[in-house]
Image (cartoon, rainbow, N blue to C red; front, side, top):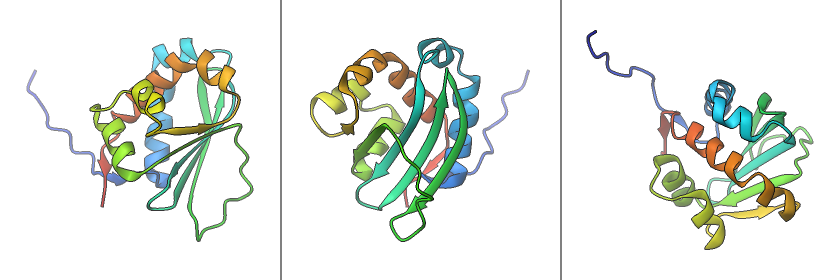
Amino acid sequence: MAYRRNTIASVPFASLEWGKALMERLNLNTAYARLAATWQGAVLFQDTETCRFLWLDIYEGKCRDVAAWTSTGDPATRDAPFVFRARTAVWRRLCEGTLHPTTALATRQLKVTGNMLQVMRYAQATVAMVKSAQEVSTSWT
């Protein structure tokens, strides 16, 4: 079988298109489905430099919906029990695989708001989520 080069265009991090691509990859990730089988609740990613927000509706190992906006856009009153905040460079390193999510949290490069006991309970699911994000062709400009 001949190798075919990936022709998927890069999309801006935390854009709606990026979020939909992440949702697709999460829903194909069997490790994530297993590790997040009891996780119920939304997750919000915030890029503190670009003021981009990405909201994911997570329910029992699947992502059911996604929304994205900028600080100037309408947040559509999307609530999330877990909010992950970081600068663009940190998100980039996470998505490129040069920074592990646990290290980012431990060094406070990635900040989280929410029930820390639940965050710890789903640490491996979060790592699997980041692995799915690493499969999305991302533009950082």
